[in-house]
Structures are given as structure tokens and as C-alpha cells.
Amino acid sequence: MPGTRVAPSSAESLRRFMSLAKTAYTIPVGRLAMRAADQTRPRASILLESRSPKFRRALALLEKFAKHERVNVLLVGDSGTGKSAFARHLHDRSPRAGQVFHQVVLSAISDGLTSSDLFGHVQGAFTDAHAPRAGRFASASGGTLFLDEIGKASAVVQHSLLDAVERREFTPVGADRSVRVDVRIVAATNVELRDLVDEGTFLPDLRQRLDVFTVRLPTLRERREDIHDLVEHLVDWHAPELGYRRPPRIDPDLMGR
Image (cartoon, rainbow, N blue to C red):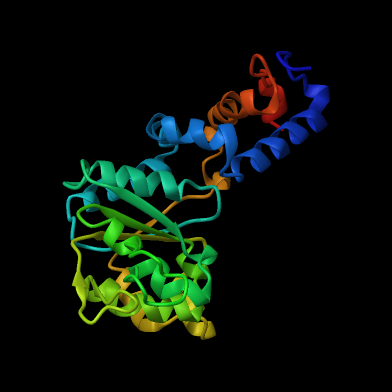
């Protein structure tokens, strides 16, 4: 029941709770989305607290790279290792901290709308272009553009990004002149881009332009000392969305299994 302690014998209850929490976490709508928007920074700061020496070394490297605001940074790590929190932290520790931080999930961009989505369009550029639109690059001008799931970007998206990533210059759909923007680019992937290049599914030139500074995030398997704190945080975070008046407490013996 909500508000009760999860006992060692109720491992299945813990699994069900964490499964529900994972589902809630991936739905960017409703109360959860609004709450996340209000508390992004506090939540990110908690996710960056660690007892793991390996995690702390990765964070220190990120903070070292943060001051080089015109250099691209690639974050590599398994799903759930904190790449989004790292990207936000890099922005907050950089000279661009007071400017916009704009995240785009590249795997979600439709090939047919790639140019308009990334670079915008002028009014009348195509049938439904009833008004001009600023794309993702222009929206992030002056700040940081976070290209999430770069390893899952389609070939169309990859080709569209080539020149924009290198020169920070692009042409909106229907425009007769190019636009230059001042934007820092941070990309994230859960697979090694070199492996994708070897497989022929990722452009080698784009990899070279993105992979200037690289930070590799350790997996949870490599930072077991953080599991208790992370589980407590996730339970506290998701309990209200799952109908719990008070977050259930997880028995330490259960998490030690």
C-alpha cells in the first residue's frame, strides 16, 4: 500500500513499483512533465551526486570541458547513466549558463520534416508553412544545443547536420540566404559512434565533428555504491505520480541482493 515500507520478502513489489516509475518517467505529458519542468535543475543535481570514483572522474572531466564553450562534446553511456543530466550540468558550468539550453531527440525527427525541424522555414516554403518557423539550431542560438540519441539519427538527419555542426551555418527551408548561429553543440549516444561508422550506419565526417571532447559515463554496474541513493531518489520522485501519499521506504537488505 502507498506509504508503507517495502520489505525484503516483497521484491516483486519493488520491481512493479520501479517498472511503473520507469513508465511514468518516459511519458513527457501531464503532471509529470510540468513537475519535471519546474524541478529540472534540483533533480539533475541529485543525479550528479555520487560515491563512485569513476563517476566523479567523468564529472570532473565534463566540468573541465565546460569552459571551452565553442568545442563540441560527445557523451557516451548506456541508457539511464545520466547523459541528459551531464549535458545540462555542462551548460550550467559553461560561460553560456545564463542562455538557453535546448534538447532535441534526434531519433524522434521525421525524415520528411528534418530540414524544417532543425533549421526552420520561411512562410510559404511548403503547403502548410503558413508562418515562418525558427528551427532547433536558431532556437538555441547563444546557448547550448543538446543532440540526444545521435547514434539513432537517420541517414537523412545525419547528412542535414554535417555542415551545420561544422560551420554553425544553415539555410532555412525556402530561404534564399544562409543563417549563422552561435551555439554550442553537445551530443549523446548509448553506442560507440566508431562502431556505427565501421558498420556503415553513421557518417565518419559527422563523427569527427562531434567527437572532439568525449566523456564516457560509467554504467550502474560500475557504481554499485550509488544504487541505494538512486533508488531512494527515484522512489521519492515518482511516488506522487503513482498515487503514493508518502514514498515507500525500501529495505536496505532488499537492495543489497
